[in-house]
Length: 124
Figure 1 (tube, helix red, strand yellow):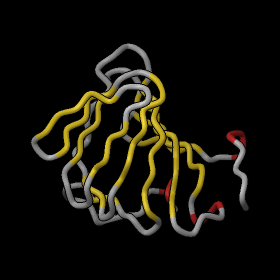
Figure 2: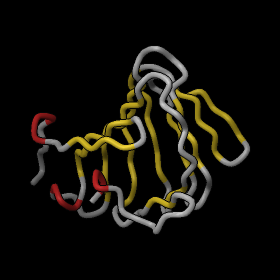
Figure 3: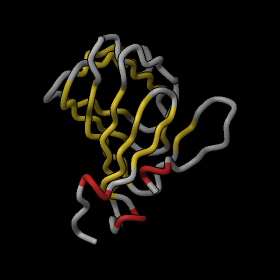
C-alpha cells in the first residue's frame, strides 16, 4: 500500500502522548516506519531506548530532549538523531502540543526499564 491517508492512519495513546502510525510493515513499508508523535502540554518524560537509530523532525511546538547526558530543544524544522541503545527522554514543557515526525528502521524495538523489549504498535 503506497499511500496512507491521515484519516486511515491508526492512532495510539501511551504515557500522555499520541502516535499516529503512517508507514510501517502493517501498512506496506518494508524498511522504514514513520509516524507523527504528539506530546501534550506537561507530558512527563519517559526514559527509554531503542534498538535502532530514531530520528525526530519537529513540526509544531517545542520539546526538550535529553540523549544520554546532552539536552536539546526540538523546534519546528529541527532534527533530533537518537543513536541506538542510548537513553532518550522527550518532554513538552509548554501549554501547546508538540508534534514531530518520527522515523525508525523496521525491526526497531523500544526498551523501557523493567519491561520486555517491544515493537511499538505504531511501528509494527
